[in-house]
Image (tube, one colour):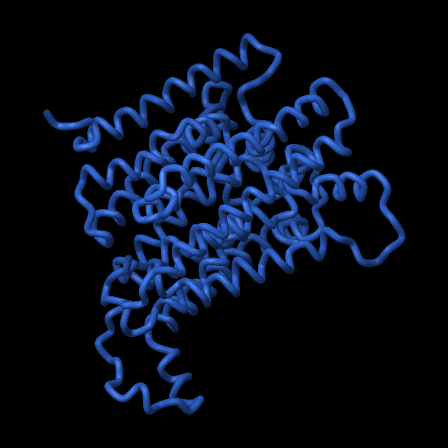
Length: 425
């Protein structure tokens, strides 16, 4: 008898049904409970869309810190109350499309059977956390589509398309720029299959020869296309919305001091900065990105990308989220979308005791933080020190330990690149 995972129709139907159930449950909870199901960010999105629909700037809505593209995409929510939940449906559809792209990459680039590919794709498709976040009105599902579409385009050698997706993704949410170093470093003649690799590369060690070998056609195409896409979108938005676009979409994130719903160990320091700004000209929140970017955009790409590109993208995203000064539950989806590519040959599955311990620690330290956060935000009890801070540190240490496991797994891969292959495990 065929198993559940041998039928893509069954798996995708279950994924859609899960989101439909949560969607309608959310409508009921919003109408009948003082604790609303809809994410507060969704009200920010829809308010911005309503301002845009009436000819105003989306930045007239306080705390809207996103590209105007998102407000444009949600314009139907301003048509009538019936269309208010259009964005939730759009984000949930994004989840499903991302899952379909995961299957394509696993099948075509990793040569997995359909049943095995569906099992690992279900880590995303049937994940209640993923489905809940999207049906509550968070736009992370759209990001999932963009980053997996980028990976798919690269593995299919659709370099021009990959450049457009990369430029669009960075415009949409900034952080996908960390994937550019990994992809460019990975795109040597062996992996991309240009057929122009020199037989005497070992003898061509002067800088000019190395530079020529590095600047191959695919790398140049990806770089130019992504930069043009990113620049064109920014010029367009700036011409329409001016300085508020740059300030709220990009510059705000350098000095933001959000401390609510923030799992980061920077949480308490950001709270102190927001409540009593000091005279110091050097603010911690402006320096927090240094270790974060060193790991996610420099060290990990150079060390790991040529061994296993998708898993390196997971490690980069995991490091970016772990060391970010603001870390919310939605950000976990940024790396969860890459788990189907890493887990099949990971030590977390190969050694069950390790995998169970890792999952238990990740969940329990997060639960400890949520318990402290509940006391702070719902019971109005000050738990910043020591409770919330200790919980944040424990969660951070757990994540850095997990990052070490991921990096060790990728680093143990033998470096035997094959043309057209994205991994060599």
